[in-house]
Amino acid sequence: MIAALTLMLVLSLSGTMAWAEEAVIASVPAGGCQLIVEANEQWHTLRLRAVHPIGAGCQIDQDAMVSVLNATFARDAAPKPAGIYSSLSIGRLIDYPWLSHYLAVTAYRDRAWDTKRGRPVALDINRYVAHILFSKDLLAPLAAALEAGGYRVLGVSVEKVLVGGFREVPFYQGKMGPGRVPYDAQVWFRLERH
Image (tube, rainbow, N blue to C red; front, side, top):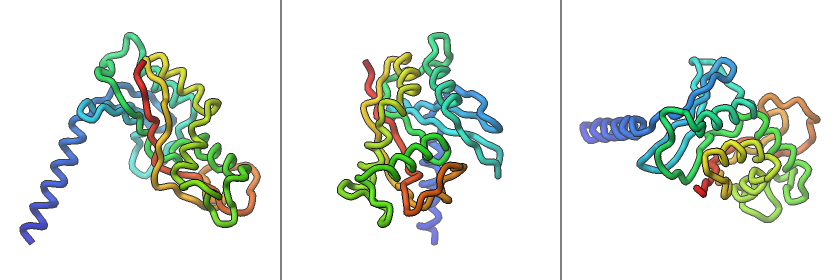
């Protein structure tokens, strides 16, 4: 019993220490939420997340995402990102309906996706989703904001892909095709400083 309590205390303190190492670089309002970018200097990573009141949801649109990235790398911003960062975590894709919709619709139309079985014909599902999200057209607005800070997107990494019908795609109002499509995942943009 004491060992279990000690382990819980150590784990909760390590989570607190990791949180304390992240500095807020930029913050912009996004609907009823605050969209923030945090930097972890120890791990050389950036994290984009929405802070919202308990019980409230937050839909992050493309403009809000670009706005907070522009604020992150603005020449007169304080504090400025201090290190060289290897990735930008954006969390769950469903927090960004425009990205979630793009993924679902693109997979639905793609011959490399099997809508009946709800998985790619050949690739691993994580690689498949990462490939779709690494679209030059999709990332163009984000790439411009990152470019201002001296970064470019090298690739996309995903894990924990969720698959379901179009009814499960948050805020989707388009054609409800049959079958199953990917609509959510944990997402990171791999960055390169130039």
